[in-house]
Image (cartoon, rainbow, N blue to C red; front, side):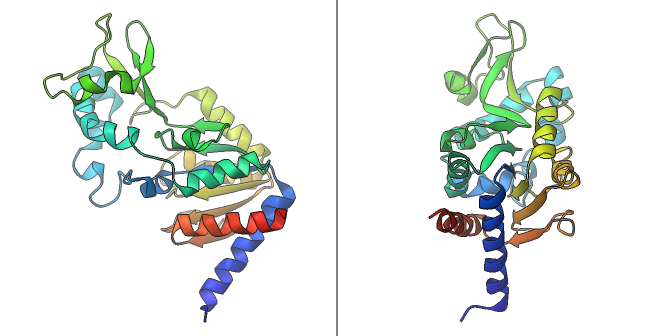
Length: 260
């Protein structure tokens, strides 16, 4: 016999599915929690990357400008982890919702390129992408995989371009300003959507954590699928706590039933 909590949660997920199918023009905001099932740990969690590498040094843009070797030392661990990861059912569900004409776009805080690999087409990468690096001198952009031997070679402190310039990751490091055009697009999408769904984000990082309220103030409903509490739980139209893979699977099942 199902508990009252499970029955209530299923009822809420069904209401969200009905809402999505009826109104369409939905927007997803995704965070690190959707990539942990793909084997990419949440860097902020206990035992995560920031427990071994001081983010104020190894992922600090100002430090990178002075000495890039700190970042590239950390990249020896993160590069194979991220480049070898595969999309999971959450990424695939979001891509399917876009293909069905229900979702307009995805705003992601993630840098792992898994939304694209799952088939999503309209993606706003707030924090950049791990897929490429750019020479700071000649500005040539290449695939990170093209220099993976250099990244993984402990004898090479800093991977360099053929021109001699230093390669910079195409991700947004701490103390680095987000691309204004990308942020503006994210805010515009939030102000125009009918529904916003947050998945796998603790909503602790600004300005991404302000996007749900932009949507809400413009008249959209917003829902949170996350394992832990967020500061916007009281503002959300519904909070679906627990395993995001299971809950998103339930949502997709109910959406498909509505479309049949």
